Each structure stands twice: as structure tokens, then as C-alpha cells.
Length: 68
Image 1 (tube, rainbow, N blue to C red):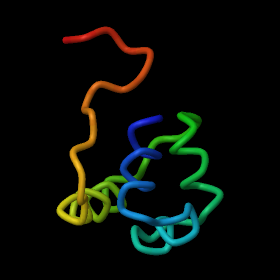
Image 2 (image 1 turned 120 degrees about the horizontal axis):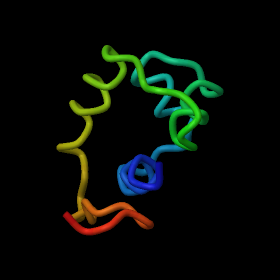
Image 3 (image 1 turned 45 degrees about the horizontal axis):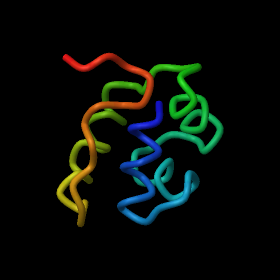
């Protein structure tokens, strides 16, 4: 998902660092980010806790998706 990658980049983390912070392997995180796997609920909660670290506004409309 492009949005996950955007958020990760804006926080300033690589995939390994993000995976470690949220408690999953880098391979699993890479598959989540590419849309091939679902993020476990516990990891999603940890990911959400990192959102206040964003220094810039992230567009909430991922590329390729119609506007709501």
C-alpha cells in the first residue's frame, strides 16, 4: 500500500526499522506494504501509535483509488 510506504518514509524509517518497531519481520512488513499480506492487529496498533511522529501532512487518498 502506497500510503504505508509514504507514512514510513515521512517518519524516516526503513522497512527493517518499521518492522522491528511494530513487532513483525521485515519480510512480512514488505509484503504488507506491497499489499500481499495483511498487517496483524497488534502490529497495526503499534503502527497507529507511531502516527504522531509525522512531521508533515500525509495525503490520505492513496494513488490509484477513487476519491470518497
